[in-house]
Length: 540
Image (cartoon, rainbow, N blue to C red; front, side):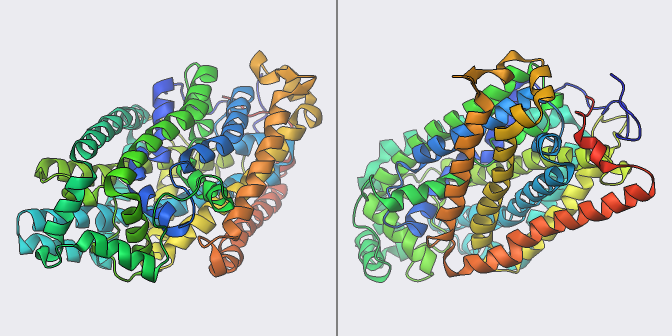
């Protein structure tokens, strides 16, 4: 059915179905970051010292599954570029849809800005430090210290952001191939890491730590870390209990790792065999992530020793007594399991590669959102243009790159960027999910015409007369409210959360509202009513 040019920029998006199910899965898993498990062994014990970190991924999965199911079902019912922007604007209102999706987009871009410094500071710097210790090379250690400073951190991250943007703007096929094959490579590296860690065991780790730390001036350095962590931070002396309110609250932190599961929803119009691909990538991807992270986390936790993991994580958080010069990621600490230089380099660089490929996934996905806003005439139509050679929305990608660089600059020169990443990114995202959940709940009733006309029968499935998408919406609403509450309460948000809320989250949503109001007024002056976009689904 032809669409009115007064409603949409064109009668067809110009995007083509080039993305396979495995590539969609790769986009989701790359957005989550499989090898971020190396830092998870620090974050959970540091921010939730009384929580059991071994069950965190499972709690996270149980919480995220209804949300992933909701997104997958909506993606099947309305497989269009823009995902939740299209759904919430068609079910609730065009303004609500834009503000929700705009906020989710900026929140995801803030993650690029917050995470990109890790390439230099948490991957390259630890790698050269490890090489300096293993090869007794002072120049490597000097380089490691330099890579921890602001200037190289900024420029390395900026180059990576621009390079990944060029890849996304240049080729959909290349972007899909990168995330697909990296997913396979990351799993292989994870297997190699586990084999290395388990074959060495806790005894080898202790021996090497005592021998290599501080030129072996402290032959009992391992136990000293545990003692200092318990004395100065109150780190847990063993494995924390599974059943505790703190462990449940830590599940909210575990959800940070799953953010990225919903990325395939934003390019559903470009996916081959969309129904199968959405279930595989969003629901299946979340399950794969949980299994992968749980196995590697357990190997690290027991091979370092629970008391040691808890202590060194706490010392890093308070910035006192941490015996490792950077964050004690498992990839950096790998030199205490093996002196094989090739393996130590591999594990450290794999952490950087995880970040880089995540940028490919995020810039690809988020450019589709700005494309959708432009296609619906909220933004200038230039951002909905498709390059005739690459068949990609180049202008939209460029905007995402610029926004990412702005967030990068903020994160480099704001030492509280970790709290921003967690409190702003995670809490803000689940605040937006609340609106998506409401849309899912009322969708079969408020837009019965769209619900009944969905071409996929699975999108209309009911249980006891209640639409499945409504059930998933209710569960997602409960989860989203819980996550926001959990992040307000614990140490991860702490006393700074109110500032993050007032100066980060609220302005993000407010900025989206202002942009929409300005666009609405401007289009009314051109005799274009943006309310019309909520009347029909955009073309493919």
